[in-house]
Length: 330
Image 1 (cartoon, helix red, strand yellow):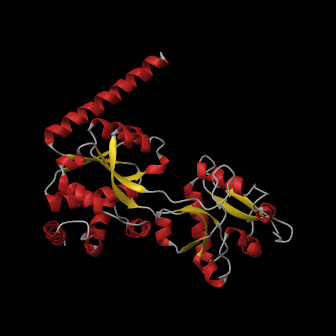
Image 2: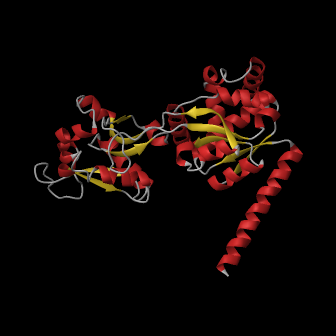
Image 3: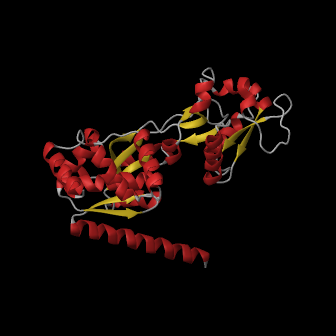
């Protein structure tokens, strides 16, 4: 019965994707895949506005999971994915080599992650540069769960994300690796927190009191836009299996279905030039939080205030049309 149910669900999903493919070719609409996170929604809204207002294309955004997105790009029901975390997709290179989709460009590649401290700590203690420097400043990072915490007797605390994350496992290994980081292992406790909200709360509380804080975080996020944080260095050669080194950044790419550029050459030319940064998204996500905005409104705000960037992606005719569309909204 369970196998029959799974088969039924798979066939239903296949019918939906095939129906989307038929609809796409009938309507000549550019279909963009969307994940369930705000940076992806923001980028999609920016691309949609540019394509519709600057190039006269009809654009549809559809929320879909990673596997559905890959299948949709392969069969033509999805045209684009604008924020593709390529190194998190095990089949990425194989799919490209097989012609299932192709890489149009790199959206951003500075998506840092690692151990951060607040900038106010860095300003006060400029020699605190690397992960291993933490040992010399242990007194700044008391464990709030230890009554009468004593830096000479007790371990300091480093916060992490949920234990289910693979990156959390990496840092657990780092703080257990006594061969490479003996002083860290002896003096610090890496403590995963089981929700992003809880992790965020520790940062906000530390900032409110200008207290000590060190922990794992990543970019782009609203927290990194709202709070000035410093990423600690780690000069050891990266090794995921032992928790050693600095976590490398990923290429976050723009990908299209086979034949997209042939059908939409101007759109492809724009997307090939589109290049942003984590700082862009940090700022936008922070602005959304501060002003209680949806991503569509944030995209309009960003386009209105960053013509110097997006104008380099588009033709002069498209720039004029996009600017006029933005002005009409004021």
